[in-house]
Image 1 (cartoon, one colour):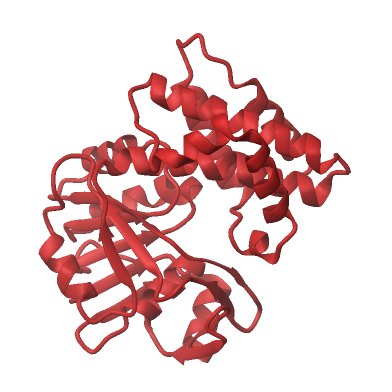
Image 2: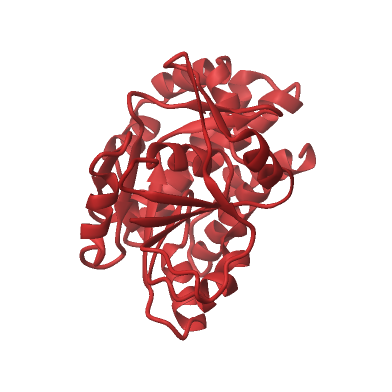
Amino acid sequence: MKILIYGAGVQGQFLAHALNTKDNDITMFARGKTLEHLNQKGLKLQHSLQRKTTNEHITTISTLSEHDIYDVIFVTMKYSDFYNVVPTLAQNKSENIIFLGNNMNPKLLQSTLTQQSNHLKHITFGFLMTGGSREASHTNILRFNAGELKVGNMHGKITFSDKLNSIFKNAKIKLTYEQNFEDWLMSHAALVLPLNMLFILKQNQNTSAQTLTKETIAAFTELHQLLEHKGHTIKPKAQSIIFKNFKGLSNIVLKSVMNIGLINQTQGSFKELEALYNDVKVLNQNTALTTSHLDALFEASKSVS
């Protein structure tokens, strides 16, 4: 299978490594210093929990023309950058595209790309259950077991699932098909948005941990109420139950997470958080619900970002 990984950040680099089998022809889209590093030094990953280093050479490109055809394009960028690449993807004749990562409004992204393209497009979404960080000489990867990619459609089944199954058949990663994936994506965004703002404030403010965790738990509740008000189901269900009914336990968990190194390998950029937050505010228009605790977290984290 001919595969393009559009984006060479942590997620894109790990996916290129995981899918690099004899049956897959992998190409990475990269630019600037990342492109130069990949071409000169190769794709060097340090797998933190597995205590091993991998290094392999992957074909790279820095432009995508209309006639560069791939069986599947995986878009691995920050949510705030997705719309910047829509025009390029729209003019390209590849049919099957998967946007990977945080997303608070997948239907809008899907319709935007469809409307801008004159070519047939099958657009779906996914989420890599991995984290990591970029260093000058390598990329750190945080994954459990082989890692996992969750994928799902907005409506019905993925039309190119046979291609996906073939791509992942001998790959070093688990492929999971999720039902009602829009709900899953929005629920996950509702989790990471307050959580990452908490991380920012923990690192840049002298506010007590107790105050920060209390505000974060309240923001979780606001987001869950908003999603349910809009007809979405929180997935997994335990996510809303824990923060709503077990605030003491939630407080302990958040304080523990704040004090371990895992934080540095899971948090996103503030630009991405701002894009997710703006989508929440659009979703909250014309409702009687408040997001005052989320708003307070956002303004505070913005002031130190």
